[in-house]
Image (cartoon, one colour):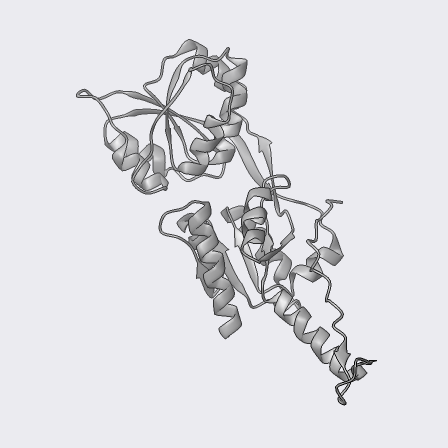
Length: 295
């Protein structure tokens, strides 16, 4: 069974009060008053809590950024990544071909690409990344100058990358596109129309976690906001929350792809940044929390 981390709420402080007569003697608050304060405190805590659903080990950066803003996190990993059917071909192609571009559209695609690239012996490659999160994965890698990350589109999405990727004067420039099995064909279609010769490799898959802690799922159903970084996470959440759980909260998505999946799944309150990235995602989370507080 997949373990689930529950970020604890901070303990309620005990605040002694002076007696009505103004002496220094402490008096106990009536039990009903203390219970009311405790209930209000717990409600306030829940209203500042979000569920984070990325793969285990991939939620830390978001959780730390939220904590700095006084927002609590309940970690419920709903997805897991596995190597895809084409992964073994990746190092072979890198050794046999010199591609003009490697197009990488997510941090996970970058991490998987680096595995194959190291197996191939660290060949020199020119890389286009979809946004800052994907670029950061390459910047943190030991590369000896062999990774030339030299293009990021004006907006962090596949459509803009396909429309804006620089090309030379002649058709037929080659692009290697290592992708998730579930990724759409937007990249290869958009680049092919522009005259690029695209080779797609399904190097990894994104799957729903099969077993979750039942108590953690029940706890998550009381949290007003859930965060999504992939359509797979959206599907897993909706499947969990169908039936008698009665969840009617808001979704804060990392970008438009996850947001479209959330709306298609029937979620009514969906927030996402126009320019995907951690800062924009956090802004959308805050908007979602505000929406639920005002509900």
